[in-house]
Structure formats: structure tokens, C-alpha cells
Length: 293
Ligand code: PMP
Image: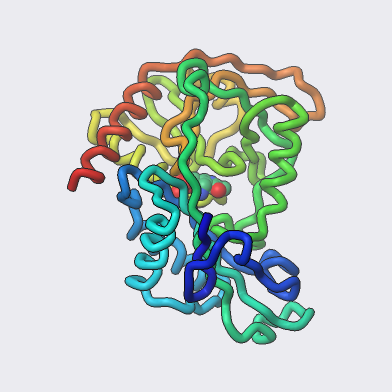
């Protein structure tokens, strides 16, 4: 296996970063996750645009020009002979002495890792995945803005630990006001009175690239879409629920357990709904069209 590190492809065993790297010391850096279908990186320009937005929000200068970033990803895929893959691009503040000052780091560390894409179990799509409403809150917009795809992921990891303890796949986090935000690595949607609802960016979410496509597809298919502030109760009452991200696409959610009250009193069971199925199908058609272009 090969990894792209700074300016070249190196064997994975030689892809080493210093213990003084501020990504390691402080989680100071950003990343993107992409999916490759038949050799084509889906929504590459959108991911790169978001990478630049994250960089700008943390005052990081990306050490490469956009065409060179694209070349580095394609070269890594080629070195690993991958056509259906998962790409993880990481840029940290880089090597520096101990101390929070970003100026201690002269050059960011740039890494591209690729892996064969392994499909999720079919049962996840047929039956839906289980979830909880986590007692861990999403970062405040005024703290680490959720629109920064930051290496500092401890909140989401704490929520994931809670999900694992509850033996479920995903944890949905609320914001400080108690409104729904998103999952640890996904955006959330639900259907209420035939309207597709999803927390707005103002609630404190990462504006997922899959989320934007799903909203667009829903509108194109005649559905009403509402972005706004929603409560966990509205999720429990929904007729269907699903989560989205680059690798899962559109994944139905079959149950939600409330862990916010330190009890498990509220459990909502959901069938895999027709709108979820339709949007997954439309999403996959969109991917196929993009790949053939
Ligand atoms: N929210 C969070 C916190 C995430 O980590 C992700 C995965 N990148 C998403 C939402 C979904 O984003 P996307 O559709 O761009 O993969």
C-alpha cells in the first residue's frame, strides 16, 4: 500500500509524521473524505472547495495548488491500483515545537490515503441502522464551527463511544439549545407529513456534500423540503428517518433511542420508508451519470 506524503508517494510503512506535528499534538488540521466510483472521484471539486473553506476558517495555507491536489489523489489511487475506493486527504498545521502558536509550524503536512471501498452490509439498507440521540452535544458554532472539517473530532468520538455502548451504529447530537444537528459522521433527514426535513446549517452542522445532493434530488422529484430547527420529538414522530454521507450515500435509520435523559425510555422504531428508498435510488443514478460524463 502507498500513501502520498507531502510531495511524493511512499510505501505506507514509510509514511511517517513527526510526534511534534501539531495535527498529532493538538488536532490542529483539516481533512476531507471522498469516494471513488470506477476511477472517478465523485464531487471532487466540491470536496476541494470545502477543504479550502476549512483551511481558511483555521487560518491554514494549503501548501498546494488545486490541480496539484487533484494529481496527488489520482497518483495515490494509481499507485494502489484502486478504482472503487475511499480517499482520505489530511492537512495538518505541520511540524513545530510544543506550543499552540500556529506560526511555530513552518510547513503544513499533506497526506493522501486511499483504501479499497468495502460496501456496508446490505442489511443496513434493507432494515436500517440503529441510532441514539447522544448526551454529547455538537460543538457550538462559536467554538469549533462544525463547518470546519477539523481533525479535532473528540466530541464526535465521545458520541460514537456512547453509540457503541448502546450497541447502535450512529449517534445523533443536539446543539446547545437542544435542537437536532447531525450524526458523528453523517447528516440526518426525516419525513413528516410527506415533507423532507433536515436541520439547517444554522443549527451547527457540517453542510454535507451528500446532503446538498439529496436536497436537490428531493426537490427535483417533487418533494417539499424544509431546513430548520427540529426537536428530537419530531424525529421520534417521523414516518421515516435516514442519514447521509459520502460513503453511506442514503442509509435508513430503523430506531432511535434517547440517551439524553440518562434513560432509554424513548425508543422510536421506523420502517425503511419509500422516500428513503427513492432518494437512495436517485442518488445512485446521479453517481452513475457523473461517472459516465
Ligand atoms: N457531518 C459530519 C460531522 C461528517 O463528518 C460528515 C462526513 N464528512 C458529514 C456530516 C457528511 O458529509 P458528506 O456528505 O460531505 O460526506
